[in-house]
Length: 253
Image 1 (cartoon, rainbow, N blue to C red):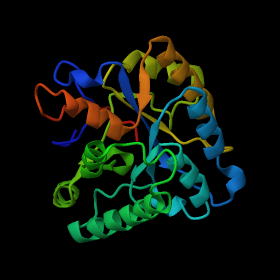
Image 2: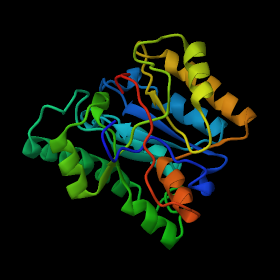
Image 3: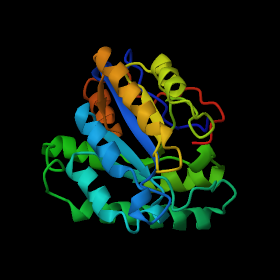
């Protein structure tokens, strides 16, 4: 794990995260422009059913053609975050090339946010909370691969690289029941869970895996929130104001 990456918040150090888990979905919204392949609507309905909030890490090359679907998610109180333009590793890029890609991707995310600013679900934070959330800029390195030039650029622009402590390795494992149970076995208060966006004919099993995972969390009375909400609650009553870094296997996030 690259130094400074965030994998979870330890409740012993951040008691505000007790009863909370952040859900993140990678490679949003859909790798194909044809909306018939997208499953954003199904994910949105599932999150509503379980009163869950999520952070969608966008490969921003995928956003064109799906803007309204993403606007609907933001209106529901979900959030978008930076996962670079393309679904490939950027670890071999120069500092200048990665910086251009990062800022291009963030520009797309900012455009989505601006389109729904002040609308239902997006204006529920008080001024202090909104300031705290706006101060946090989330990034997830594609395929989980970081480099020294990437870290330098992220630090320059105030981004935190977010990894996970709750992941089933769904790009390689297609058994929804196994994936959900693997994530539930790893889930705890303060966890940051990762699952990839399902599409019709591609990782479609993740919709069922997510349903089982959310049902299991509900049984354990763990509330599913965005990364920014978990961050805000972690620092609302933080005893040791440090970023917690945990282990991550080679799972191709």
